[in-house]
Image 1 (cartoon, rainbow, N blue to C red):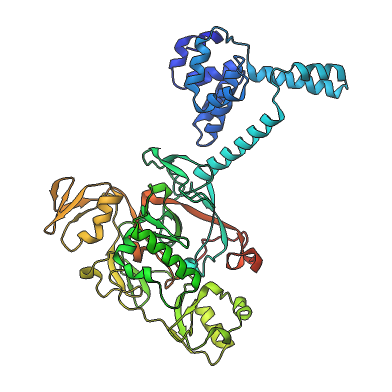
Image 2 (cartoon, rainbow, N blue to C red; image 1 turned 60 degrees about the vertical axis):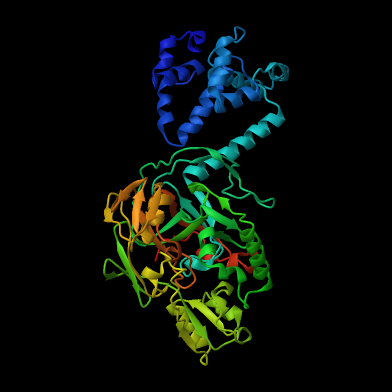
Length: 526
């Protein structure tokens, strides 16, 4: 409808690709630039510039006109096409460039009179307020698009990945490495993930939303890769002051609401807040891409079988390669006042690596083998014993006494990781392992009657998986809430791969100092 006003055949506007080549010609840019629209991310900015110059070619210079051109182009283009007052003024990109050149020439030749006249009569002139607002809006949206599609910054908030990643490490995570996941939640506050700081509340609207899609990646997820992902069980959660809790965690283990006598006052108060939320059923339901972010090591990929025997992980029957600084928990006969924290800091033992071993308030340590040796050298009288973890069948995935009745974090499994296209027989015994995969992650209506599965209303004795899954564990094996607690990581929950540590603070506080030796370090080295 608009093309005839620019002396173009209207039929050209109906041919995909060619229509954008003609728009480039209308605004005064080479037709070949239409190909740039096909480049992911770059195409978005090319498109925005193209549409703004198009409406300006018809004398639409206001901020609102430019806004409509980018956000609601059919509206503004229809209005221009139907308004007889909107005439084609020429190739805007060329005209603006020529006008700017005239102003520059007047400045260079010190022709003040001409310069003042050109500035005064400038049809393309923008107010200072508009210049600043457009610059800020562009910067915010550019950052939002980069964060959404290419690279996002994260900070390590918990010690679950020590000694590979420390609390206070700041990471750049590549979202293109494993394939860019296209946005699903599209109505949100730019640059915020899921919560609004200070005031609280969710930072997005659940609708409208888009289906899940992923572009091809540069590499596939392999064993021992670090992965950033959306917390699989984080769809229904209580947002407490200290952390987020899955509804299922609380239902299976209500005792956690009581806390324990060794927690400090701050955490006790937060437990009270959490109990109040649970009593009021004040939980939040989140879409996939707005679930909390976790970072762990992928220790097993789709199709693998894994088992932990006496702390050692086995994958497909063979011992897995362990990270160099794999950490475990050790109880000691020392109390906190017997330790020199500055001395411990020299060997990388931080405050977050300390806990209480027993009711006598003896200290426990989360440390690797190298730190264990040096700690004994520092304190010859210290006695360190590996912590003995008892069976926690309800806390451990798949949360079934019949399956995990004698499993612990140190002796776990065997368990199989689902693979896309693989078909399994459904039995009364394994339904508990795969029920969430079938019903939640793969969006089926699953009902179990007398041990028999009905999927989408049909009696089923087998199931074929629709996507790959992964098993994620922290390198701090005794202080990590990971797949042993909540199960598989679906492929559609994968966010990206950490690429570089760009900053690092001690104990997550700049006041404690900076870990200079960690800056610009590759986090993927084991």
